[in-house]
Length: 500
Image (cartoon, rainbow, N blue to C red; front, side, top):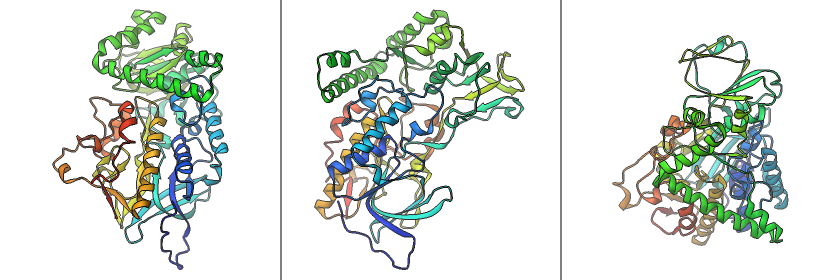
C-alpha cells in the first residue's frame, strides 16, 4: 500500500513507528486478516498489537478443563488452510493450527506481544491514527501511527468474565472460580462442584471434570438447546480414502457444512416446533423424556440464543452415568456450604464455578477520539457491521453467532484489502462511511434484533454498541449465506463511502 506517510514532529519523542495498517489482536481474526493483507497488498507495512503474551486470543485466555470449539473447524478454520483433524477441536489443537499459519506465512515478525492499546485518535490534519499503548509488565508507554486501523480484538473483555452479584457470596467458605480465569492450583479430586450456567462453557466443563469430582451439578436458571453428534465428518473420511487432496476436501466439506447450517437456521425460523422436538428428542433418547422435559426444554424458539454442539453426547453421558446432574432453579443466596435455591433446596458445594458468560468489550475498551473529540460508538451507525459513520479509515471484524466467527474474518479481510487498493487508485488518504440522502429518515435500531438473537451478554450491553438501520447496508445481517455474495459485490464508489 505504502501511501503518503504522516508528517512527524521532530520534537515529539513518542512517535516511534509508522505503518500503513495497524491490526489490533493476534487471535483468530487478527492472524487471518494479516494473512489476507500479505497476499493482497504485499507491499503494505503493518503491525499486529496483542495485549497477551502469545497469539490465540480466546484460545489462549481460556484454560478451563475440556476447553474446545463449539463450531466445526472446517468452517472455523481459515478458508486458505485445510483442517485435517476432528471437527470439534481442543484449544491446543486450534493454537497449533494458528501457529502453523503464522510460521508458514512469516507473520510472527509483525506481532508485538504484551502491547495494550489505551487510546486511538484520528487527525484530519494528517489523515492518520495515533495509537497510544503500554507494553510489558512495566507498561512502558509507546506510540504508533497508522493510515488504517483494523480492529480484530473480538468482542469480550479478556481480563475478566461476567459473574452476577448474588446475595451472601462472601459467606461461602469454599472457592468461587470463573472459567475465564481458571487457576492452576484448583484441586477438584473428591470435591463437590456446582457449575452455574447452561451454555457451551458449562456443557464443556461438566464432562471434563465429572470423573475427578465427588459429584458435579450444573445449576441453570433455564434450559438451553444443544445439538448432538459424532465428532467426525464422514464425508471427509471417505474422500481421504479416495486420496483426494486435502485442499479439495477442505473446500468440499466447508461447502457441505455451510449449506446444512443455512438450511438448519431457516428451519429454526420456519418450523421451530419441529426443530425443537428433534433437538429435545436426541436428549430424551439418552436421559429419558421426563429428564429432558424438565431440564432441557427451553422456553424460546431454537437459535434465539447460540446452540452449542455436544460431541459424542459427552455431557449427557456424564449425567446418565450418575457422576453429574442438572438442577433447574434460581439462586436465592449463597451459604457457608453451598447455594440456597428459591425452591428451598440447598446445593452443597466445595467449589462453585460461575460459567455465567463474559463482559462485552466494545472495540477493545480503547479511548477513541476524532479530531480531539471523544468518540461514543453508540452515536454511530454501522456499515454492514464492519465500519461506522463518522469514523475514518477503520474496520472492525465482528463474526457470526449462527455460523463460525472466522467466516466473516475472511469476508471482511477481502473487503478491507479491496478498499485499501481502491483508495490507492483514487489517491485518497481518507474514507469514512456516511448516511446518504436517502438514508436520513431511516429508523435507527439496536445493533442486533433481540427478537432474532438475545443472549444475556448482548442484552446487558446493547446500549454501548453502534446503531443499525433498516437497510442491508446499515446492519450486520448475521447471514453468511447472503453475505458471502453481498460483501464481495459492494460498490466501493457508492455514496455511503466518502473519500478525500
